[in-house]
Image (cartoon, rainbow, N blue to C red; front, side):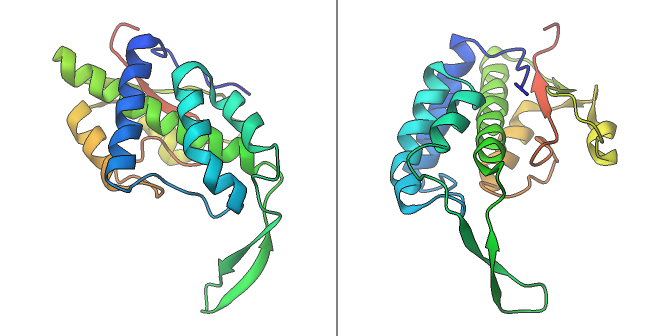
Length: 179
């Protein structure tokens, strides 16, 4: 299901691309362990194309082609050591949705900072069958754009401290007030 990203327009996309450039320049671009060698080589260009004119759905479709996703990966066991696990069949969609939304949230935060908007509104950009309690508690709350941007920059590829976005499949995002 498509994310409903309220403020996804040319202005927000410009900031999304700026944020991707920031990650590339600081060697922070998240490379999923699900990506094959081909996927790792193609990822930055595919992500850039999606941020410029596409959606999380177009990114997922591109990731699902040309053997860009591995069939299995090495996974750390809770008690120590490693095992080989199958990559979930929805890995392209999960990765695309998660990363596209993260850059969207960062783009909206940058847009708010530039415009002097002090608060963003948290909302659910995608309906989910069983929403997480923590995600539900965030809906319709506000967050300061600079804190959100700093949190996401500091937690590339991992769960952000503020919980926005809320992790794979949560559908949590942000919007400008009045949107």
